[in-house]
Image (cartoon, rainbow, N blue to C red; front, top):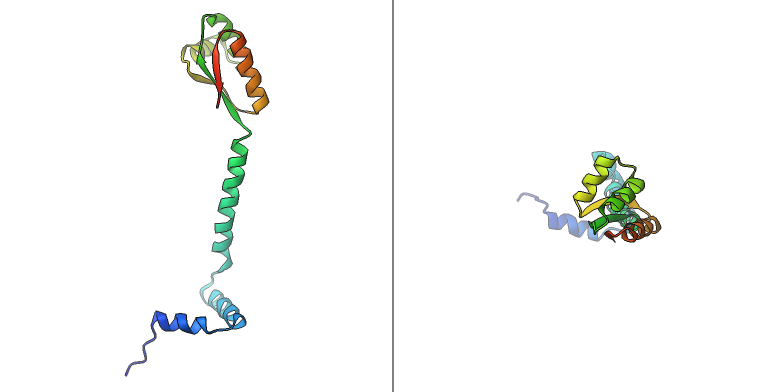
Length: 128
């Protein structure tokens, strides 16, 4: 008879070990194969934390979108130039291309001020 060990035999053997014996086995396996059992766990734990931080950061930055120009196109172009620092040609292209983003990644208060300024000059704007 051949003495063949199955995966189930190994699982049962490990299940019957004490915590100390299991810890020593893990250390020996890490040394033998040059790996660390802790690294995958650390990476798995770090991913959700990074994602949560990214989501929190996204909520502090807003985009102001020019939805419609209205009937005071020249005034809106002047406001867009003042807000963005674009030249006349670029600001006119942005206004003509509405809906288009005027300013991206700004704090909520700044986004609200930009929207208010655009709307005071006849445009329609939204914050996303």
